[in-house]
Image (cartoon, rainbow, N blue to C red; front, side):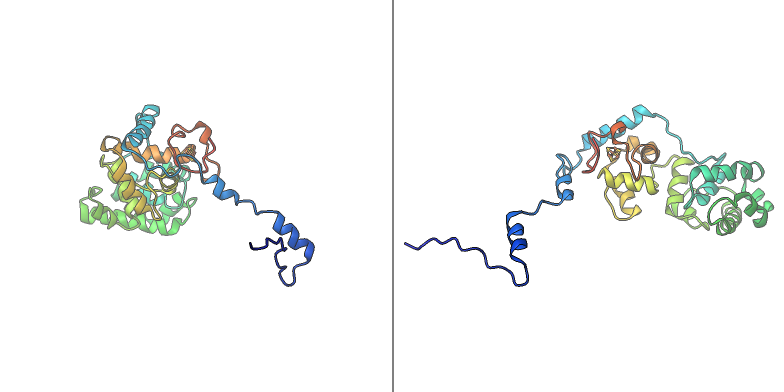
Length: 255
Ligand code: SF4
């Protein structure tokens, strides 16, 4: 029979005897993050019934959600969205309230001119570039589209200063199309809840369009923006008052 010995493990060169003993006796605690990640439903895929439940709750709480960018017609909506890039809706509204009183059509905007337009919007970030774009887009709406805001994505995206998000907002709010504009709030909510995880706004947009039942699509963009702006806040989400906290998949939710 082999003789059992209890030889101490060889000590690493350079490690003092006392320290080596303490390290051997004290197993390392697991990192906190990995403990947090094991919440019960964090990895569970969403079922169609759960997604329907999310949007039914949003609908019940706010049947007719409104966007917060002030406008009086499709043209002023288009201008407001172009001005809102990297700015808050409240900041844009403060400037456009006066502006839209004097210039609510492409022709009036051209008559106002770039220099005077700059004066109205100088409190908004990047106002010089934005003023140039608004004048150029007004000219293009007049010359190429008979003075009316165009109704297709490609045409809206062809206007100076207008990108995919602008087209989605205008198509949805002015023309009632089922588009999903992804701003910083929608991007965060799509990822946190795991309704539509994605590395880019386009991935989140397409993911949301895929999973949201069509009867909710007209208002889904506003429900998600308002949810991100007032409940699922970037730094400190208010999970305790969140309508969908029992369904949300975020491992770090606080309920
Ligand atoms: S539970 Fe918290 S993290 Fe999840 S959607 Fe609600 S506020 Fe956001």
